[in-house]
Image (cartoon, rainbow, N blue to C red):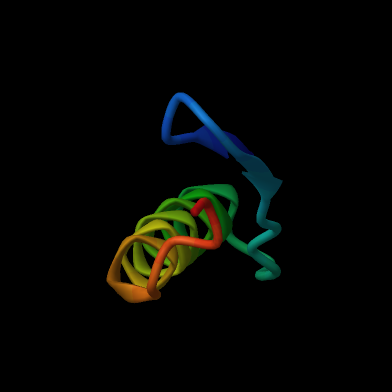
Length: 45
């Protein structure tokens, strides 16, 4: 799954025998990573 916050893009992959579960994992991981990026201090001056 590819996600963006308008400035950065990232990809996540869910792994499971069940396609619904794998998709859900990818969505959750993408959201968690995006939130983690948002909480970090900006590198722009």
